[in-house]
Amino acid sequence: QSGLTKAVKESKISLQQAEYEFLSFVRQQTPPGLCPLAGNSVHADKKFLDKYMPQFMRHLHYRIIDVSTVKELCRRWYPEEYEFAPKKAASHRALDDIRESIKELQFYREHIFKRKTDEKKRKLIENGESDKAAS
Image: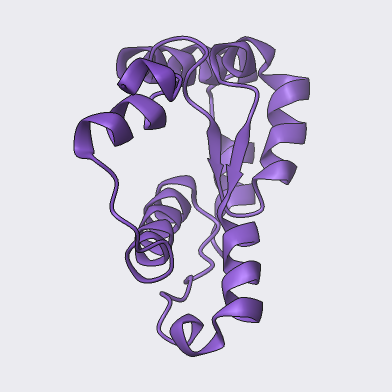
């Protein structure tokens, strides 16, 4: 048990306040419309966020990066490499899940998506700029 349900029930923070604080933090880190929602099985998170945190969702890019999709493709197409992929602890706490998803995606990038891209071009593309802008 992660204790999440108990923590939510005991919290004095309203859903609206949580959305405001969450959005304030993300706005400091990312420009509007460029940051995709990312994580493991993030489609479930998206349903919740669409319904309960619409302002936050309007800040994000419409695309999502679902690490679990990459995991499943790796498991099927690269089973030898998959054996070394980081395993999730399944604590179901946001910060732990975020860190684990980042670590897992870094593994896939280093071991599966091996082709190198020019660093400046990669930064532009990762931040939502078009491929033509990088030329």
